[in-house]
Length: 88
Image (cartoon, rainbow, N blue to C red; front, side):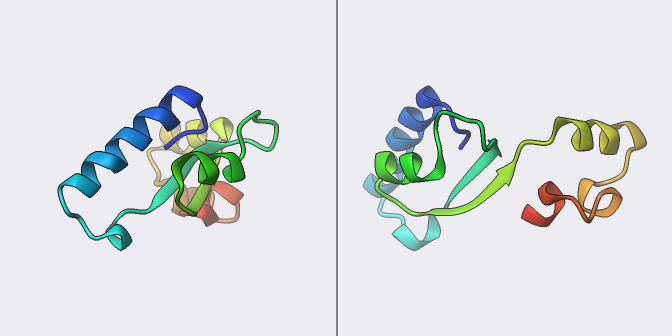
């Protein structure tokens, strides 16, 4: 999920539906995408709103993603020392 209030609410509904379908809770993990330290919504707020721990957070890094895309190189290979590549 991304740190956006609407997305968090939609994610809560999806988690509820998954639970209704009897999926084991350990099969569902919360991964935050495009996290920014300047965001108004942080991981703790997401955890509280969803009632689940955040498994991982992938930082926002448009420049690195654009450069990898322009070179047609996977992010984790072309920029392996960056925080976004390490998050994967």
